Length: 125
Image 1 (cartoon, rainbow, N blue to C red):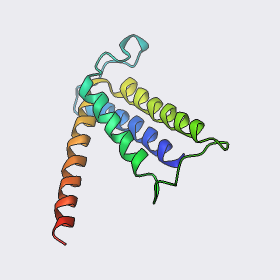
Image 2 (tube, rainbow, N blue to C red; image 1 turned 120 degrees about the vertical axis):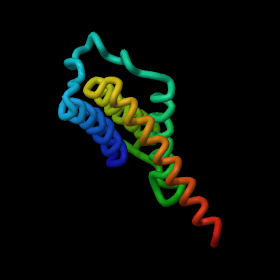
Image 3 (tube, rainbow, N blue to C red; image 1 turned 90 degrees about the horizontal axis):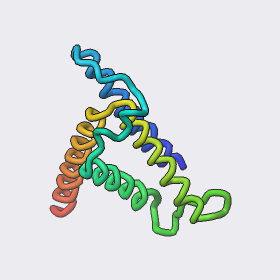
């Protein structure tokens, strides 16, 4: 559950950082309100979010036998992970609007670049 909580908190803080950065730049974001909920959501943003979740789901343990179990149930563990990280995505969208999604795009590019460099370094061995 720690991984799910970390992703969720990261998403919310990404949105908060976008809001604070816009305010410091002198271009504050529109006020938070449920009438703007998901106005700036895009397919690339959802794909980046899904890829980030897959990184945590696939890489959550040392082996494939390390499954997320909540109250003795692997199925409940999967749902708990999905709900927690989705709430973080909702929070990031709610707080940071379009800037949250732009930062999520940048994160996806940076993660892909780091993974490519890592793979290249490991292939030289």
